[in-house]
Figure 1 (tube, one colour):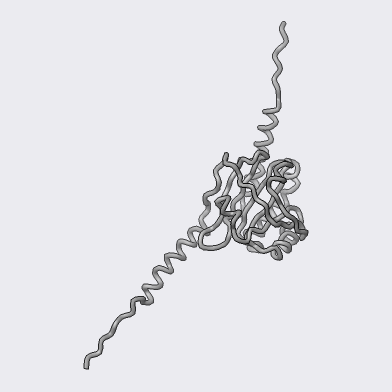
Figure 2 (cartoon, rainbow, N blue to C red):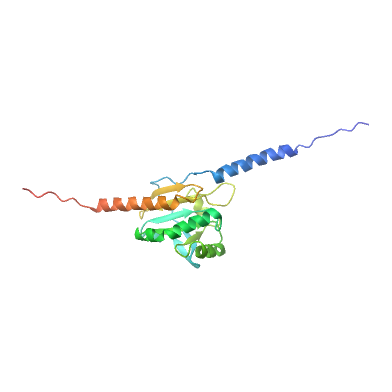
Amino acid sequence: MRYFYRRSRWSLPGLCLPLAGVMAFAGFVCFSPARAALPVGSQAPMFDAQATSNGSEFDFRLADALRQGPVVLYFYPAAFTRGCTMEAHDFANAMDQYKALGATVIGVSTDDMHTLDRFSVSEGHGRFPVATDPKGQIARMYDSHLPLVNRASRTSYVIAPDGKVIYAYSALSPKGHVSGTLDALKQWRAAQGNASKVTLPAKPQ
């Protein structure tokens, strides 16, 4: 009697190779030093979000914040992770400089409100608000949503009061986000000051 062996359609190597490819792609996406963001000069999408500042929850509206001055909007992957904690400390330490420039700072992640209430107190030191984007909808509007996972990329924007994006920076490292946004605000402020100066005609001799 003959026995026939039929090899399974899916072997272990056959399963591992596609899985390895997916993991490699995810790693490339998540740990790439820079990702795409909304281009400078584009109109920033308006949004409302539930936010918390020093543990006190409120409704954040970008349109309302822009009426007060420029807004620094930064996306980060997850509260209490090492890089996001470092970045929150950097923003908190720089808040006096942001306030002097008349700017509002708001951080956005997919974390839930319970997590963000704690994060805003312990890592943000109550210096600036953070908002929840549970489905990643806001991050997608700003081209700052990672594929395959419901997380935002680490991306920072400066939005002028007219709603135009004047600075965009995306990088995995938390370094550079605060210094870059501060420099952009200073340049914008200087440009506003120069535009407001009126040169009077010289008096006739």
